[in-house]
Length: 168
Image (cartoon, rainbow, N blue to C red; front, side):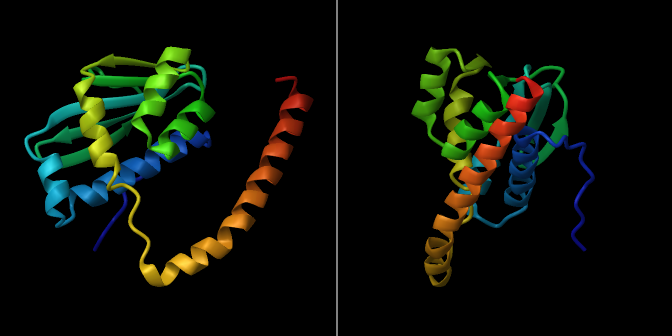
């Protein structure tokens, strides 16, 4: 029987996304995919992703083929990625574009401390996080995209209204 551990997840979009990424990484760690197993093998590292402004921190521990995630700051991380704010983290992580991370560092929207080579390794691993869409479902995804875009615009509008009302 497959069980999901209870995680301390805040309602912040960055924390939710990091928890989902961690959940997917745990699935990958248990998979039979040889490419993924090779990426997990012989790694003993801790990667922390955080946003001080949003008071969000979550860290991933890769321990020789095993994976675990934790809420909060790591005692000692090999790589720490600190986003300026929650939405910057969400945007950069969902893009999955390493050059965008480097641009964000230059613009002051992101800071990186520790072993930079782990960024390259984590980027290789991240390519496996989003599962491939089976061909027979791709037409449905294409049909849903305009509605998702409209929903996003609607949500952005009302988030803006709420921020204005709250004086943020």
